[in-house]
Image 1 (cartoon, rainbow, N blue to C red):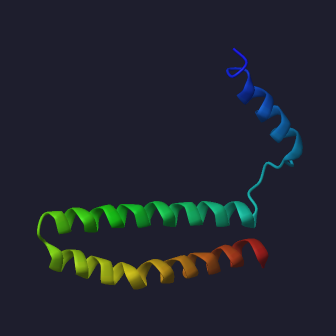
Image 2: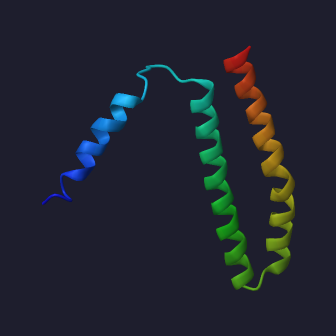
Image 3: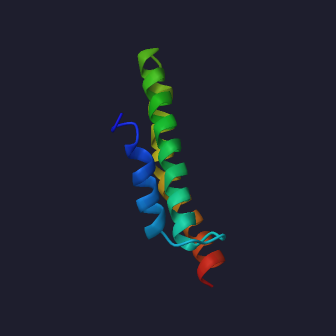
Length: 88
């Protein structure tokens, strides 16, 4: 029974430490952007792996080569947009 009561106490302790804000900040956007890019990277890896398992290595390599450049450029571009929106 003591284990079941542990998460609510932890939540109360953490909520007392965190600042209250009702608007998004630059760091909120950065964390969200990073999470979305991470999820897209996982989807790309699963897709490439499935293509390799189906014997379509050529398609898998072409997707991987495109995403090798597309993902970092997209991340930097969206990071620049975030900086313009929140910091300028």
